[in-house]
Length: 279
Image (cartoon, rainbow, N blue to C red):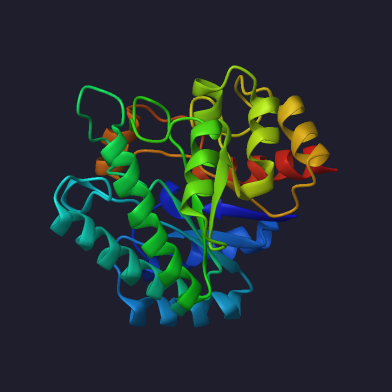
């Protein structure tokens, strides 16, 4: 098992201001960090790959798609842009030596039509993701598709739907991830959801019900860790928690208040919580 920390708690971009944070995370005992890729500049990510090698932190990456490059848009040009932009993100992932790119890039985050996904949207989503998977293969990256809760998207909101989606994409570089926050909202039985997606799960986000320090809320943690062990999961466990550092992300995730004492406290206590439960 490898333990990581999603950097969106601090920033949506990479800058020298994060160096002390990376060093602190290494000192706390983290194996790696999850880097957001919104500014897709491979040269910048290559430089950060070298810096993180020096610190001793491995990397995974995370991204999303928006209205202007929606993978399930009825406009073929918009869907083509989704593929082009994902290819740039994959180039950044390759440059920073990330072998896994996770996130809700199956559709535009926060965009709604007032109804559920249509048959056409499903087809467009599958076709677009298959192209992404081919580009991921060329970059040596595995896709970990993330389903969200119904308040953040309408396309993929359950483990069962995401399994069906991944099966229809039918590409070895397209897999899925499990996020405790979204599952806590959408799944009737988290243990059954974990079992359902286990054959395709390549990544796990450890996130509390209020996006605060893992272990300090109401997620059924004992059942969650027990079932992950039962299904043989042995990949990354990455804490995903949000604060007020990114106004645009706070607006999307509806985070309006501080959920923890400090970022360092959350990272320290969250890591101890994960390691204790894995043991």
